[in-house]
Image (tube, rainbow, N blue to C red; front, side):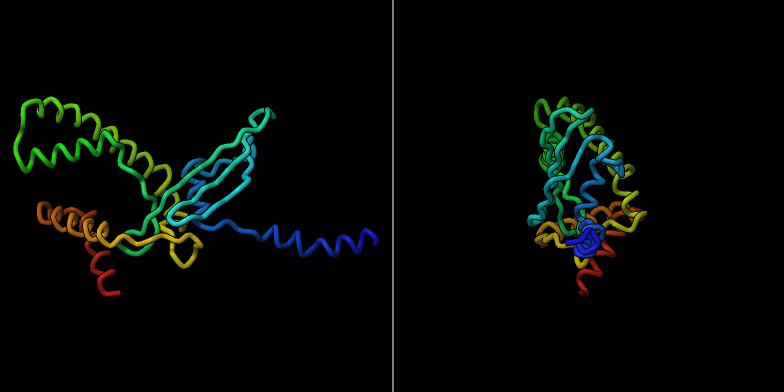
Length: 201
């Protein structure tokens, strides 16, 4: 077989590899970790990608400065938001969740001995948690929105995410309560508009 014949036979394979685009969920997940940096230049080579229900797992061989490769894994969790689109499912830090529970109990039942000191500590914990979320918003979420990749449209990805009706209903109720306290709350207003739109569909 001549080299020309071999080259012609290889063309379809090379073309299919060149056009092997990333699933949006994979691209969004990878951006959340590396913010668009060239991962191969940093010594990483993607080896496996798995799209499970509500989850993306990406494995890499990591060999900085040409050292022996070690395996790294990136895991991103996703959920369906009020509008029906797919968004990151970021867990609330355990300490912050405890503080939210404490504040809710104090609001409903009043203070108990030791609560004041705990609430003062919680102010620091909740501020740190809010700072992390703002950092993620500025460095990950907003750039992805500007690129048109986020939130992820369900019809553009192979990622399957189960819609949690109770969680979505809780968000709508919470937004309604926030808007009752502060009619100028733009974020709560946006969520309620999504709730109303979802109810029509």
